Amino acid sequence: GEVMWLLCVSAAVLAWGFLWVWDSSERMKSREQGGLLGAESRTLLVIAHPDDEAMFFAPTVLGLARLRHRLYLLCFSAGNYYNQGETRKKELLQSCDVLGIPPSSVMIIDNRDFPDDPGVQWDTEHVASVLLQHIEVNGINLKDRANSRL
Image (tube, rainbow, N blue to C red; front, side, top):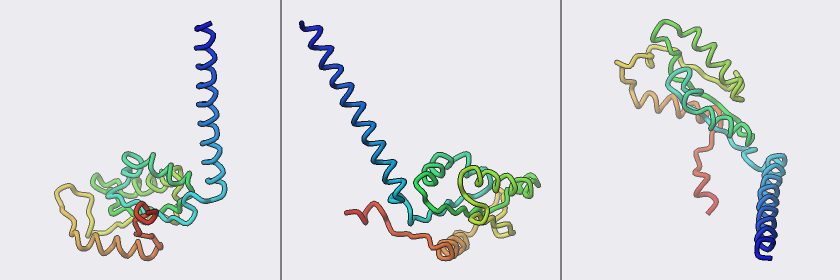
């Protein structure tokens, strides 16, 4: 009797858990399909050099793309430290394409102001100015979404 009762309770708990998880995933799918998650969101990923998008941010970028964010990428150097800048620029565009960032949304800054050199410190005001320009041009919303829900 007691073993049968435990089996029934266990089966009921497992069934409830399965249905709860299934229902949650169905609600998430319907919100995604309805475009409610991130439909109007524009996200700018800022990196120092090619490969940072994959090495440090791939899971985040893939998640935002899945939520239908419009993704942009600003890369402050061509990654030319070993004179491989042209190759690294091509690799960055290919990587972004795989991650869901279209080439038209990728901006690579390739000038002397931002060399790929660990011995050079970039001018922070110049970085801020370039960053702000890209935020404005691409319509990136700086509003704190977490606090806007309160």
